[in-house]
Amino acid sequence: MIYPADDFRINNNSLPPASHGGNRWAAQEKWGIAAESFLDFSASINPLGPPPMSLQAIQDNLPALEYYPEPGGAELKKALAEYLQIGEQGIVLGNGSTELIYLCTRLFCRRRVVVLAPSFSEYGQGVDNPRLVKVDIDLKSLKLPITEIATVLKEGDVLFIANPNNPTGNLFARWELLLVLELVKDRQATLVVDEAFIDFAEDKSASLRDVCSQVPNLVVLGSLTKFFALPGLRIGYALSNDAHNRKMERLLPPWRINSLALAAGSAALKDQDYIQSTLRLIARERDFLDYSLNQIPGLSVYPAQANFILIDAKDLGITADQLQDLLGPQGILIRDCSNFDNLSPYHLRVAVRSHPENEILVAALKEALIRK
Ligand SMILES: Cc1ncc(COP(=O)(O)O)c(C=O)c1O
Image (cartoon, rainbow, N blue to C red; front, side, top):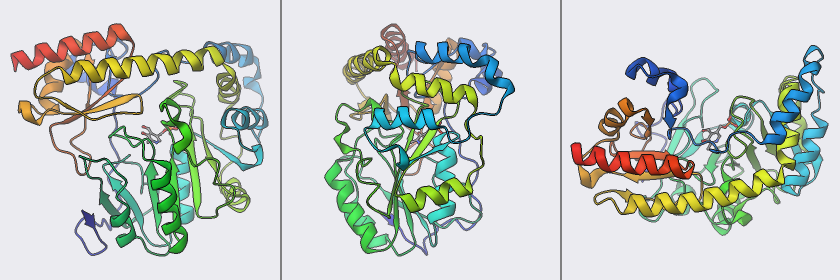
């Protein structure tokens, strides 16, 4: 389903602030458990924590705090170029990819912001009075709604697609994205593909990072927040052609990536042991959670390629909010997804964590469902 320009879902006021998982401080307030003691399945961060080489780099660079950071972030760009196998000149660094999401809307939206429903709630934020158009994803097939996008997309629009998508966790195929890119070129619109979770995917060929230097209508965003477990340092990047890169650099402030983030980010991308351990852990534990949750009668589990899993508890007749109320006193946080468009009060999302933690979650869910 599409909600076109004259539909009530077009929002002509500023959007309300988006709400996210990972709010352990609100949970502390509600359940009287110390924020740091929660087992947090609501935020999707690598359970291994930051790479050991990043922690060492932070330690080594503490004396540099009295100097300004290197303004161009040359070393981090070099490390990113090697990691992503692209040219260094195509990279713009951001204080988290959210800074670049906001910038893309300001830079490319001459008409409307087109988003998928459900998808990450920051798309469309960062401007006054965004004209937002939402295109539903079919929750059964989880295919990119190409026909609906073709119906709605107009000149001057900016279309955001997260791949893998948050909160559904599926990976759209490269051919689907390339078809949409053709449409975007044809309509003189802009496509922003947000690849914040793509490092967790088994098949990275869906990434469009290799195409963006040649196409003016495409920006690819990435982040070190999720895979490298560095949400507190705020490191994101944008990949696009030379003209867009120069413009983005002009519009962003200098020194936006602090010295510790520059050092830790460069080290993270070279920490091969950590990268390989993460890939093994997430693949194994995603399978374990997928299997174990599917064993619980009444839960529908969506197939995932990221480090989180979307679940529908409708057949059990228990909402995500009720489930959180049962799990909260045990110090377990899940993501209630009822505030995403095109999802219901019965949808919840859980992060893939370590094996003992995942076992605790599965056991707690089984028990909660018996007690409900
Ligand atoms: C799809 C997606 N993109 C981007 C972000 C933001 O990442 P960052 O920490 O780099 O701003 C998130 C955070 O949840 C996300 O889910």
